Length: 213
Image (cartoon, rainbow, N blue to C red; front, side, top):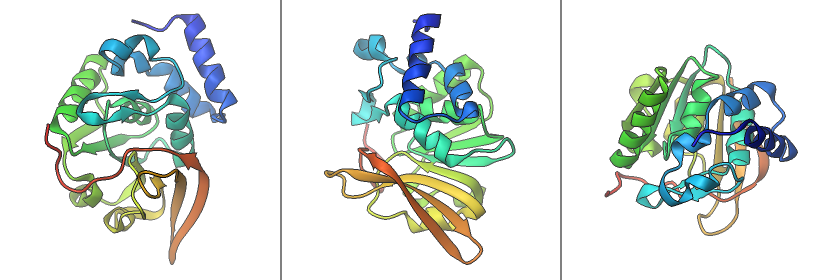
């Protein structure tokens, strides 16, 4: 079901009211219809600001969190972006509107296949999706200008920090999986890393290894 103009206005109003104010982020989220990524029973709730369950016990994040993470990532048109945790593919599709190239990995091959099918249907050609253990990043494509992690680790994973360019930004939730986590923004400096805490969030845990379908 496509978004009506009224629903779209309400959707963007909700995003703004939750702090998503960056114009490019809002334009990307207006262009990518979340309804394309929500299937089955929950399709009619695609435009509500809430996380929804998807296959393999994972979730599609609530739109305002996708917006805040995208905004914090500050993606530039020439950037190469790594997303860890493809999930439904919605976040990668939003990033694809802002970046030159998006690499997205997920430990569940089924999620990658289903997301890729949506990218193909929407004609999005600048996303490379693959099933891999995202906690190790993608060394053969590194370094990245931006890295986004959509699952919570106790600390930013070392391999991902190592794959970030100097001046690059990584946004990820950190904290114990059963408690409230913090969304943090990590900027790689010449001589180390700068950490900024953005807000409290709740994400599925970042798990090493490949998922069983």
